[in-house]
Length: 264
Image 1 (cartoon, rainbow, N blue to C red):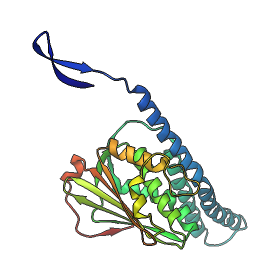
Image 2 (image 1 turned 60 degrees about the vertical axis):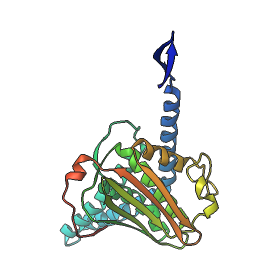
Image 3 (image 1 turned 30 degrees about the horizontal axis):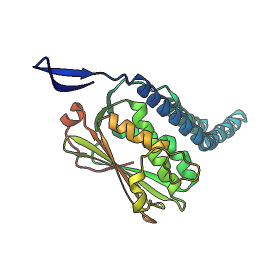
Image 4 (image 1 turned 180 degrees about the vertical axis):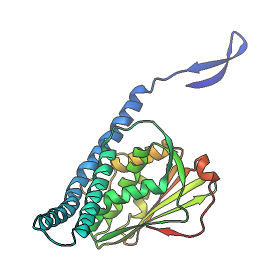
């Protein structure tokens, strides 16, 4: 809705104009949904590889138990741990594939990013990359739609993994900045030329050979709809840093800040 002051029959009045944006909102939801399924499809191969490892361990120890091996309790513990690992990875993939909603609640952003790390660890392991989360507190809450915020960080971290051909570490730094929470995704990959940085987030612009340019556009839209901002800095052959700033929830602002850094 837009309103402007006018004169009507020589008297002050206000003219209201209404524009129906239903179709635009529906298109935005479809684009976000499509990108989510695209991400899920790309992750399928690495996740299948990761699930095969614990399944092999479970099968092997089960075979040994059937043959009457000693120290069965140790085998039970290992089998239990491997099954939990499979359940964790499967659960995160299912959450990603769920239809999105506008059901916003206060979520611990550190917990959400840790869940994303679990989902992307299979893909990072295949390229000898370690994902390191650094935070000065265990709890930092934002009011958000969980699956959408996870989608943002899946996209950014996946892009970072693809940019690092020689392995290494991806750092995710979280900190409170005033009434906001700042999250940085830092890689040491190929980087982006300065003259192209301003195009990041534009529709159909991508630096990847098989990319569509939709992923980062969706990320920008999701963060903007949550009242946040995204900023990118990059240097060729040095790396790229995406900085996201989101408003902290009231619960987060009331928490006492820990002084001991946490690394995961």
